[in-house]
Amino acid sequence: METADEAAKVIVRCPFCGTMNRIDASRARDRPRCGECAKPILLDRPITLTDADLERVIAESGIPVVVDFYADWCKPCKVMAPIFDEAAGERAGKVLFTKLDTDRNPAASMRYGIRGIPTFIVFKGGKEISRQVGAVPKPVLNQILDGAVG
Image (cartoon, helix red, strand yellow):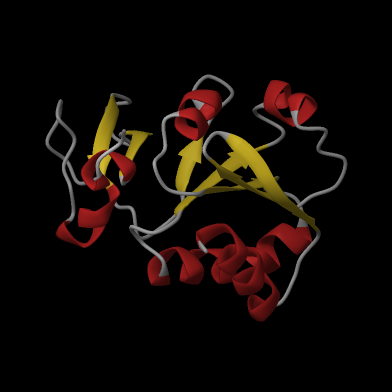
């Protein structure tokens, strides 16, 4: 049986040195540091994912993970970015917010059948529990996330 401490663990790549770190998400506000380079890993904003680490992050997270499949050239993606960032700050430690560039990571896009962007997929316990295609207002994003956390 999983303890509460284990349930809140997430695994994320350090944006500075690339080392994978297991972090207690419930302590997200304490600004955890990378075990290798000691630089901060900020969980109050979206974490960048790649084809190489997507599956591991989803599978080993003790909290829901929302993945924003996006592209830099996509105008609706640019509209959603600040809304997604704000939601990440508000739900730090309860939901892991991640972003995956579909142009740079085509394998993940194919695996999850991404046909339009932005696409938001919420995973819980390693399984997809909801999906939203297209830009949405913040109240709709919050409804999606509320369903995942509850």
